[in-house]
Amino acid sequence: MARYTGPVCRLCRREGEKLFLKADRCYTDKCAIERRKYPPGQHWQNRPKLSDYGLQLREKQKLKRMYGLLERQFKRYFEIASKKKGVTGEALMQLLELRLDNTVSRLGFATGIRSARQLVTHGHVLVNGRKVNIPSYNLKPGDVIEIKEKSKNLEIIKESLEKAKHRGIPPWLELDAENMRGKVLYVPSREEIPVTAREQLVVEFYSK
Image 1 (cartoon, rainbow, N blue to C red):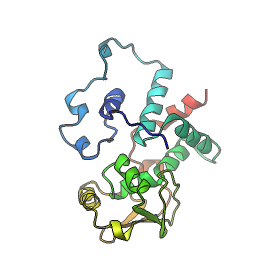
Image 2: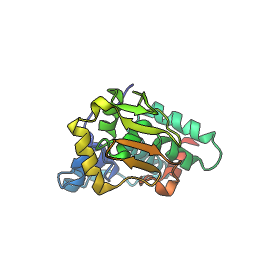
Image 3: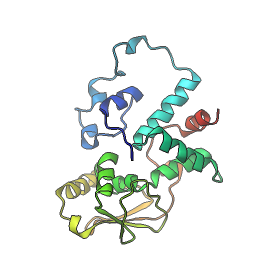
Image 4: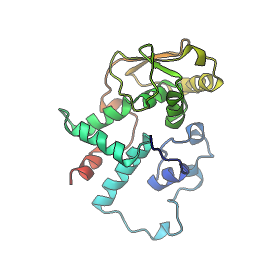
C-alpha cells in the first residue's frame, strides 16, 4: 500500500499544529512546532489569508495526515461515511478511529501511527486470535486486539506501553497491559476522539 515517506515534521509545520507523527519527539521541546512556529518554505510570510476553500482544504489535509492516509484512500472513507445514517463528519471520524493501526497506537502498543502500522504489517498483531497484517482493517465492538505471543518480548512494545501509562487510553477501549491485550468496547462518539480537526469543513470540501 502506498504511503508518505517524506519528512513528517514539515507536515506539522504546514498545518500549524502538532499532528503527533513522530511519536515521543512530539512531546519534547525538540518538536519542530516548538522550534519553528511558522510554515515551511521561503515565502511563508507573504502567503495570503486563506479563503473558505483554503480552510476546508487545510482541514482535509490535516485529518488525512493525522491518520497517515493518502488522498485516494481518504476519499474512499468519506464516500463510505456519506452513505451511513447520521452525521457524515462523525461517521468519518469513527471509521478512521477504528482502523487497526490507529487502535494499536491508541492502546499504547506503539508510540505513533507510523510505528503501529509497522507492527501490523510485520505480523505482530492478532485480532480475535488470528493474525491480521492489514493496517486499514476495520474493527468493531467486541474485537480483541493482542500482540502475538512470540512478539511480547519486543523491547519497543514494552517501552511503548510504559510511556502510554502517562497518556492513558480512550474510554472506548479496554487494555490488559500485562497480557498485551486490548478490546474495543463500543464505537466512540465524536467527543471521545482526541483529534482537533474540524471534520465538518472536510465534509464541505468533498460536497462541492
